[in-house]
Image (cartoon, rainbow, N blue to C red; front, top):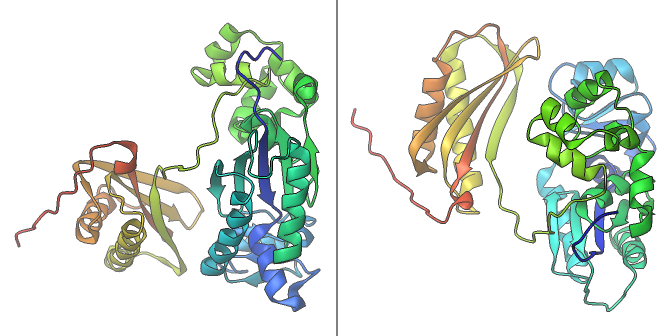
Length: 360
């Protein structure tokens, strides 16, 4: 692996079916049964599925209707995000006993740089084993881990022996490990990109590695450079302990589809209020308001407006979302509405929050 930078020891820890596992932990009657967190058999979308449900093809982001069709025995459970956050906090506390270089990706996964660590243990593999054992002993949950020289390879490796397993890819093994890997397993290669790669005869890491930088940049623009390097196991992104959020969002799926804009306004007012609350604690504000509309046929549309100043006020957020709602006619009845704030003040050192006074 042609990598001029000093090698790091990176662990990617990924909890196994986290939300579903927490529900099974707290409710013994659900253990060993196929469960879906979020959604229902008539509405909504699955947030997480237990391994028992995954055997039937139930996946996150699948509609509740489709999930029930795949698995008639499926049990739907309402998500309890406060509980997930509580447990996530305990997991992170364990991580910090080993290193302060912890970069959370979400409630259920994080990168750890253990090149230098608080235990003075030179083996990242043993540290990962110890962390996983402690999570199981102290919290009753299983985690998987990937261990390697950078974040990219560690993340790919954490999926290799799931659930409740780990995989170490040593420096000299990186290129051969990636060469035999299905291209769909590469982090950063989504469904659409994978289809494009298949058409170009790229099915494995080895196929990707055989393509020149020019070829990849011609077909994938700026991403071509990224694909060229990851095929060789080269990825320089450091573990960033304080990962600033790039957006803050709130959305609601409705029990019944909405057809009236008046009702939609009422819902948007509540969503704007919820969004304001979510922005208060980390003290963020944003310039770009995006309205997300999901129709009854599951198609999704987004409409955005960028303001000349940072805002965090529910009144301004609501007024902007309302303006976006009436920007063009709705094509169907609506099953979900969401508002997100992007272009946050965390991306810039200039934090200017302007409160507007509306004159009526």
